[in-house]
Each structure stands twice: as structure tokens, then as C-alpha cells.
Image (cartoon, rainbow over all chains, first blue to last red; front, side):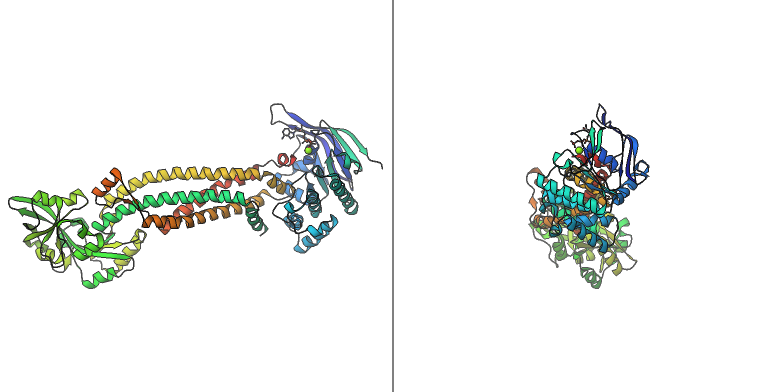
Length: 229
Length: 405
Ligand SMILES: Nc1ncnc2c1ncn2[C@@H]1O[C@H](COP(=O)(O)OP(=O)(O)OP(=O)(O)O)[C@@H](O)[C@H]1O
Ligand SMILES: [Mg+2]
């Protein structure tokens, strides 16, 4: 079943004198259980695409549906609520709320969802276990390494039980070891929980971990391949 | 309340940022308090000096006396009544007086004079009249003679030891006439008064005007001008409807007008200062908001509503504004109290002019609860108004742009 559908997505930035066409006529579907990479050179439109799929930005033309819901039809307030319950985010860096501990960062999103304290504590613990950080649960982001912070971000992204997790260059600031480790954790969680992961990268070291690779060039899909191992 | 906790934690997380913003509010409060304390202090100085010499803050008068100035509207004043006013907590001194007019003649000169019968001791306690004697001596309670303003003495051409004749109309139209020795010459601050004032003891004046046991006014001094109305109400309770209890605002409206006029220009200056302060705090807040754009964007992206985020930031600003306002007030207090105890001396022309008007040439500071409350609240409100900026900016943030980097 299609979790995400992108239909004729076009994004033009009109802010500068010369309009920038960041995306042009993008069409694809993401189905249950996928673990998919979006790759392409810098400026090819990866972040733009992920932001539009995640409801952080709106397309100039075309539409995105998530679980059958057309995001174009949601008001900005509704869109925030929709993100809270349906989409998990991991960004390149500084994902976490600085004043909260790792555990609190993971629980915070469930607090926004108004889940019970009992559920928050239980699920927070499980997820921190799953990303291998239960021993660092009470540390603040500044006390964690970049790799550890990204793992907490993954735990947080999953805490809300989203339909899919969007990760924009999650490994860009990590060394090879931490990058490999993060990808293994994401891949394991994808298999175990079935949550869809869609991550952008131009990092050759991690592209091969994806089972499907969509390549962008100048805002258009250049190729869309299944990685056979 | 997770947002309150987070707001609190945010303040601690970036101590420098918090400190900078708190100090911008802090210095605003200190500056405004200093300027205002000085301005209000100088008004207070003028008012207190003037009132102690003339009307007092509050006066008890016979009904209608303020309009007619006639002895028919004088009042009976018993010692018990006098003591009961004196025993009101905030009252520092009271002076019973008779104020009237007479013709004074010496040899072939005749001049109109203001006659004030007073209790020399009480008068000295209230305004240090005894210190203004330039020649001869001050009245003692049993003096039968007169104390004459310097200007008046010149006009009448009298010296200490000379005698003068006073002619007037006493209580109930009784004709009043008496011969008085000049016991002392005094210099009074306002030229008009100096040229016309003549003091007798209260018993002498009562005898002269045939009004034993009666006075025209009881002047009441208080230390804290803020308590004026409160004390007036207390005094009013002590007297029947046959008496008027008036404040200086009703007695010398000219003084009030002069002060208000001067204060209006002070307020304009103050508003400009407030504006400067507002922009100072604004600058800090803009900086702080710019620094936190990404943090805010992350929170909104994961599903926090701008409303919730704004609430958190609002709490932060309230705490900052409070810390600044309170610490500014606390730090100002000892400084202002010191300045109050050790006023700045006025030198040069300004000092001379002040002295000519009989006021001590100093710039005293006023320290009162209302000053702190007013200025503290104004700066606090400015800080809150400025803090609308982050709220406004949270609602306009382009999270997609912020999260790309
Ligand atoms: N707000 C904007 N205004 C104008 N142009 C923009 C804006 N945001 C992005 N662009 C342009 O859109 C294009 C796609 O940008 P995008 O950030 O999606 O690329 P990317 O593939 O994520 O690149 P990178 O690998 O460097 O992160 C770029 O040419 C960029 O300059
Ligand atoms: Mg990008």
C-alpha cells in the first residue's frame, strides 16, 4: 500500500530576481516497509523534496498524499498536528531540544501527543534501548557525541509512532563508524517495526544500505532503482 | 507544566544571553529610577520648603476662611484638638496661626502688613524660622513684640528696638490698635513676603485682634507626601462640619500649577528615555531571537504548535523582565537612599538663585514606594511589549529554510 504519493511535484523559489526551480515534475510512491535513499549532488533538490513530503514546505504545483490525506488541503495548524502524529524527522544536526535530556527529548514528542505518562516512560525506555543509549538517557544533548545525538533523534522520530521517518542527511556530520552504526540502527528498526524510512544522502558509504535509491539531478528524478544485494 | 520548566531551563542554558537581557532591563530601571528620584526629589524639596514656611501640607480652618480671609470665619481651637492632630502618626509638626492684615505706622510712614500670630516654638520646629533672624532675636513664647521681614523693615525704616503702631479690625469688628517693639528682623525667602510679613506670638495676636482662644488656621506638616490624602482624611475625622480641612493643592493652586507645568516637560524627557530603553531591550531581544531560529524550527517541525512555543518564550521573557526590574530596583535603593541622605550641592548661578528663594541649594532625591512601583512597572511593561517580537517572529518563521542548513 502507498504510504506516500508524490504527484507532479514542482517547487519554484521566487524570492530572488531569477526564480530557482528546485524541483520539477516529481512523481513517485513509497510503500509500506520501504528503506529508501534519495541521493544526488548538492543543490539537486533533496532537502526541498523531503521538506515537501514532510509537510514542512508546500509545493508550487502538484500534491503529496500521506496515507491518502492530501497535504495541500490541510491548514498550517492542521499540518503541524498532522506532522506530530504521522511523520518523524531527523535532520543533519542539532536536532534535539537543548534543555531536555535524551530521555526527555524522546518523551517530549509523546507529551505533545498527550500520551499517558506510563506509555511515555515505557516507550522512551524501549527506544533508547533500541538505539543503544539507555545508559546515556539522562544526558543533555551537549553531553552526547554527534553520533549519539543522531541516535536519540532517531529514537525521538519513532516515539510518535509515525507512518514514516524523514531523515535529511542524517550522517553528514558523522565519521564512517558512527555513520555506519546509525544506518544499521535505522535499518534494524525499519525491519523490526516496519516503519518506512526515507533518507537523503550524498554519502557513498551509506547509499548501499538502502534497498531503493532515488537519484535526483537538477530537481528531476534521474533514476529510481532497487538495490539488489 | 513542561513549558515553564523548559523556559526556566532555557534561561540557565544560555546564562550569558540571559544575563545580557536581564542587564538591559536592569540598567533601564536603574537609570529611570535615578532620574525620576532626582526630579521628584527637587519638586519635593520645593514643595516641602514652601509648605513648611506657609500653609503646611494640610490646614484646618474655620469654615469658609479660605474664601473670605475674614476673622469672622476664624475657629476655636482647644489644646485637646491640637494634641489629637499632633498625635497622628504621620504628622511631624503642627502650628496654630492667626493670619490677618493691619496698617503699620512708624513716625510719618504707614504701610500695609500681613500679621501672623504664631507659636514661636512650633514655628521653629516646622520650618526653622528662628534661623532666619538676621538682626535682634527670635520671639520667645512670652514676647510682646514683633518680628519683622527685612523688606518691610526697610520700607518702614525701623531697626531692632524701634516701636511701631498696628491698626486693624479685630474679631466681630472690634477696633484693634497696639504698639509693638521690633524684637528681631528676619529674612524671608519670597520677596513679596519679605516686604510685608510681621510675626507676633499667638497670645499677643489674639489680644491685639480680640480673639482669645481662636485661630484662623492650624498648619499640619507630614514627612511623606504620599500620605497627604490619608492624613487629611484622619484629620477630617477629628473635626466637625464647622471646620474646613484643606490640602495645599486647594490652598496654593499656583504652586501646584507651576510644579505640574515643569513636570510635564519632565514627562516628555522621560518618554524619550523610555523609548531609548525600549530600543535597547529590543536590540537584545532581536539578537536572542535570531540565535534561536533553528531551535524554534526544530520544535515546530516535530509538532510543537507556535502557540505552545510562544508561551514558553513568553515565560522566559517575563522571568527576564522581572529579574531585571526587581534587581534594578533593589540595586537602586541603597544608591538613592545615599543620595537622599547626601544630596548633591548646587553650585554657581543655580545655587545662588535657589538660595535667594530661601531654599537650601541642594538637589535632594526622593525615595518612595510609589516611585519604585511606577517606574518598575513601566519598565516591566516595556520589556513585555518588546517581547512581543519573538512571538511575532515565531509565527513568521520559515522552518523549511531554517532546517536546510
Ligand atoms: N529559499 C530558497 N530560495 C531560493 N532558492 C532556494 C531556496 N532553498 C533552496 N533553494 C535552491 O533550491 C535548490 C535545491 O536546494 P536543496 O537544498 O533542496 O538541495 P540539496 O539537494 O538538499 O543540496 P545539499 O546536498 O547541498 O543539501 C538549490 O539550487 C538551492 O539553491
Ligand atoms: Mg540538503
